[in-house]
Amino acid sequence: MSDNTQSYSAKSEVSNINKRRTRFERIKIAFSKAPLSAWFGMVVLSIYLIAAFFAPFIAPHGEAEVFPVAYAPWGGEHLLGTDQIGRDILSRLIFASRNTLGICFLACTIALIIGTIFGIIAAIDRSYIDQILSRSIDTLMAIPVMIFTFILLSVFGPSNLNLILILGVLESTRFFRISRSVAVGQVVLEYVEVAKLRGEKLSYIIFREILPNIASPLIVEFGVRFIFIIFTVSSLSFLGLGIQPPAADWAAMVRENAILIQYAQYDITAGLTPLIPAAIIALLALAINFVIDWYLYITSGLKDDIK
Amino acid sequence: MQGDQGDRSRLVVELIIPRLKNTLFLTGVSALVAIPLALLLGISAALYRNSVYDRSATGFSLVTVSSPEFFTGYIFILLLATLFPVFPTIANVNEDTSLIDRFYLTALPVFTLTLVTMGHMMRMTRSAIINILSSEYIEMAKLSGATRYEVIVKHALPNAWAPIAQVITINLAYMLIGSVVVEFVFNYQGIGRLMVGSVYNRDIPVVQACALIFASTYVILNLLADLIGIISNPRLLYPK
Image 1 (cartoon, rainbow over the protein chains, first blue to last red):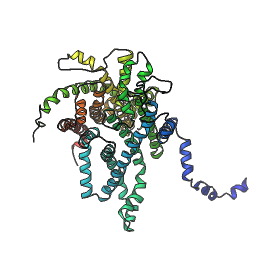
Image 2 (cartoon, each protein chain N blue to C red):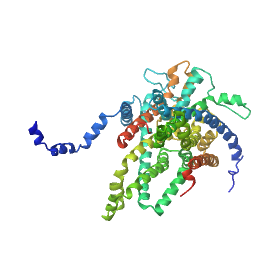
Image 3 (spheres, rainbow over the protein chains, first blue to last red):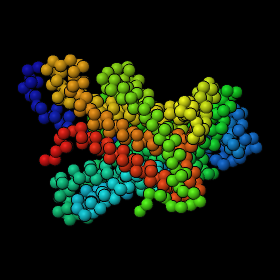
Image 4 (cartoon, one colour):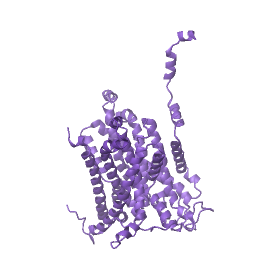
């Protein structure tokens, strides 16, 4: 024992602790500590993604395939019945995940790219360009997104491409705001100064120096905005202005089958049919919320009670 | 520049005014129900933080926040209009409808709007109050021997007014936008329905007029939130 204390050296122990964990190990540890709600969110989210990617293989019938019986009851060949012109509801629910998630993801990605690039440029510049960009973004944000989308859709006409572009541009304002405010703190730090002195190009400074350092608030914002865009697209589709037929969409299915609710007292399944796609949207939003909360928790060490 | 939005076969203003009244009635009643309820729930959840009550209240609010307006609306229709027919499905009001009938007819839209905004408002109130309660001067007040009542009413509340007022105004703006979908679900003759119909028909003057009303209300409410924030914080009132 005394021998051991004589030859004790802290060096071996320190080097042992210092051994850096690989990225994979760190992710594995984070996952093993994930709370139940985060697991729930991830499982639900992956089910949605599987449904979106493999829709043609999972769905029992085609997206716009019309069967002779309209408003067929549950069971039999059509597990969840058919809609007002005889399309299989279960298949349309599965195909809708592809349409809705795809359109919302595209819109959100466009918003992220436009907003972040302009946001960082404004943060680097801090003079005329910053003023012009920030003030015009303020003007855009003064009008609620949904109302602005109404105006633009009535000008350009409702189509899926227009929807993606309009929402992408309108939602980029939030990404601009957040990326600018986070990047302003980074731009003044030494490493950016060094990169400028090294003679790096603007694009290198934006993408290789600043962007990795402001990524985590942007990822959180992406999740939050993604839910928001899903809600906006769903509201628009529900009003008949969003995703255009024959493409299936959850919210549009709610509206198309809403009339079935009045038969609920005779057949409860008929009353539930229009509620299923709405519940699917709610479940998706809940799942993303859980995952974001968990991500926020591990990246910022945020305490649960300061939300 | 003129306030009147052009001359068609009839004035856009004539089309809008009765609809605007209906929408203001709907959102006004919903706000009167939702705001006190949300503040009460939010403040009590913050005071009894991490209790069973707090956990169930925040959990429930997360569910309502995650639900789109039409989901909540149709659940109410399914439960309270078809399975147990207490309220009418369609909120069909006109100018002759008496006030009591109006309350009865708009019950389900009001419930829906209330539930949809209440979750947001409750969560925001709760986090604002928790923020204040965790600050150092509240700790100091507790250490000085103030009772629980004194700490909350005398020390916490004066600083809480600004965030609470902001929560309320932001959610009023949110409620106004949410009313578009709710009006569509219940076939309520409000300005949101008018606007959606006009987008269908590409009736640009009406869309513009409706958008003007929505946007200006939104801007005014946000301005109001900022003003209340400045007035209630003396440090912002006198610039250095």
